[in-house]
Amino acid sequence: MSDDSPLFVSAIELIAHSTELYTQGNERKYKFVILHLANAIELILKDRLVDKGVSIYIPKKSLTITIWDSFERLEEIGITVPERPVIELLVDDRNTIQHRFGFPDSETVYYYLKRVVAFFKRFLDEEYGVDLSDTLKLYLATEDLAILGLVEEEEDRYAQLDRLFELSPESAVLQAYNALEGKFLEVMGIDLGSQRRPFMFWRVADFPHLLDDLAIDGFISQDTAKRFYLLREMRNRAAHTAHFEGEPLLDWAAALSIAKDLLQGLDQAIEEGFFRKRATRNGLSESDNFGNETISQNAAEEEIDSKNLTSTSEATA
Image 1 (tube, rainbow, N blue to C red):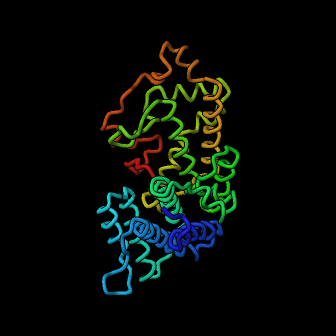
Image 2: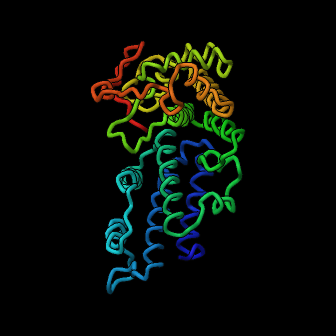
Image 3: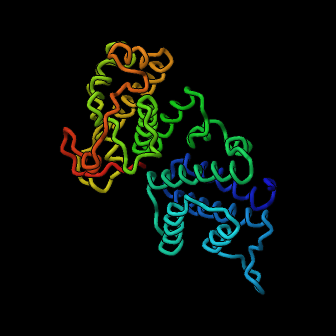
């Protein structure tokens, strides 16, 4: 398992260059991010085949196999790629850009950048025993690693959201919301792996009371508790842009501020044992902090908020 082969090094360099191009904020260069990401995946898949002693060349030709052949040959030796559906979309967009001269927007580029990085993080760990963050440190500054979500320190995380906001307000709000969702699911003791459909934590009947209690105990502001609906609406706009074309723009900065206040408040609440104390106060065990309420499948399929949004799905980005 070589992490210094030409194919491996080239794949990592493409990830690094993709990140640098994205953070420049030049929309004319976004198409190159898509091209680099697709090529990076193709290279790392072929490198793994070479590591396993499988030829990547077409018999009797000087051409290498396609990415689709790489998937098949990897499966033959017991290596599956669960991220393949997203990679297929990426390759399709790459082909469109190459042949039809398309120009992807910032949100699309960041969507692929995050998912390709997630694939590399898993693939390098499982197949090479290598940490992606450590590998990319040779090529990228800390602030660029933060954009990719590869920096764990809290200060860097919030600085990363602010920097991402400068490049794409929609992407920053979406990422902040996803982080917030993860925090709430953590304190609710909910494992998404057991959920067949997206679990909408804010539908739990106790959720408004939780926000009130967090505000009363000083972990978040009263304004944040009251305006959570705005964050959720802006998250929907970011995730389902096409549904809201032509509608008035709302305050992305306010939405990000709400998300950051909630993230910081939840971190502090967890650290100070707020949820344990709250459960005791309500006569529940800490693991039963939300009463183990079940969200019906019908509720999970419908999106109804105070603004009567036209979007009816709550897909995870």
